[in-house]
Image (tube, rainbow, N blue to C red; front, side, top):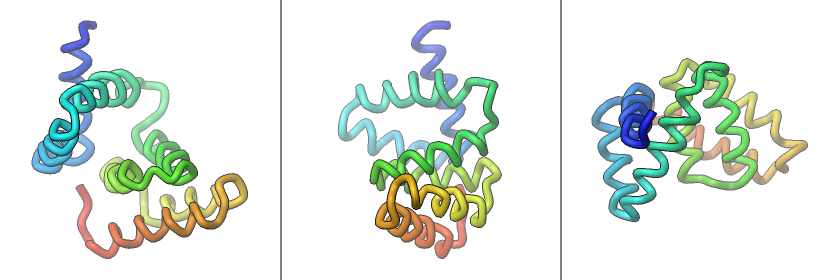
Length: 127
């Protein structure tokens, strides 16, 4: 598969997870910072990693939430909480994976992650 095919596959994956309008908004933000950032995320992260078949999207989302929360990557965490809801994760599952990280990532990381997730849940919308 060519890089361009992986890019298109990644774009399709992003659109599937967040919808067309949100995908366009996210892409615009990445592109404004760096066109290469947009290309690398869509081609590699979305087009080569998220499209693998061994794990379902819900499992990938919950795993990603755990690591992003542990690392304190709040912008990516917000996006991935939104994607997790679109990938079938429930509010309870998202909070549970965050709480599960407390002994591994620390309570401050869990607190920050839950604040982000709570704000998203209070909006009452999913992707």
